[in-house]
Image (cartoon, rainbow over all chains, first blue to last red; front, side, top):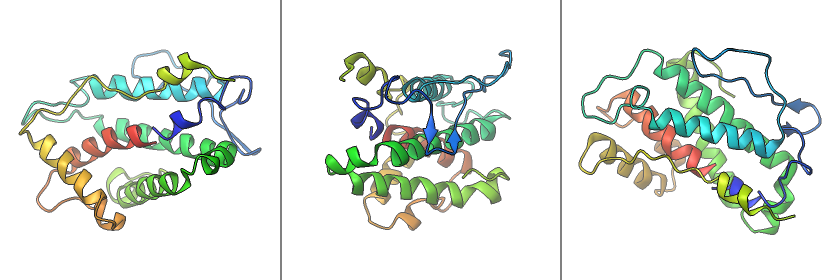
Amino acid sequence: MLYSTVTEFCSPTACPTMSAGQRYEYLWADPTPNKSRGEPLKMSAPEYVDTLMTYIQSRIDDEATFPSKIGAPFPRGFMDVVKTIWRRLFRVYAHVYCEHFSVIVGLGLESHLNTSFKHFVLFAKQFEYPVLGYRLI
Amino acid sequence: MTDDSNRTRNQFKPKKTVTDGSKASQLKRYATAVLGSGNLKQAVLLPEGEDLNEWLAVNSIISPSQS
């Protein structure tokens, strides 16, 4: 939702890489099991975010990964999917903060972004070590 | 440089909806209500007696739509 407010400025030409400042560039590796894992792909920022949101959506819509029936058990790899979702969502915040913050301020949305990010970080910090056994951020 | 196709492409809309009256819908209501309470530290805690996987699932659906 917050990312969609900057899409006008986050085009393949304006943001040819999924960057967070000059030192970080995120590449896309398909995390779907049984898909051939080639080299991680370089993508433009809008392409990366689109691919990520499509991936998350497909996982949520997949009944075997996110069971919606009452009492249906969660699959063995559920925590791994949660980890992947959260680790990669962080990159969207990182990109927006590093590359589009002035646009966010121009739209008067910085407090929304900060609150959303704070909630995201608090949630990740609450569960990363004790539950997922893995550092998310 | 407006790209309308891009704008609609990035809308996050999973097909799955939470069924009314289900455990997930109660958790979702709780998660949204506690988010509005102004205490984010409290808002992320696993509600007492709730299943951890359910809580992770509900929040993994809410967070991408906010980001």
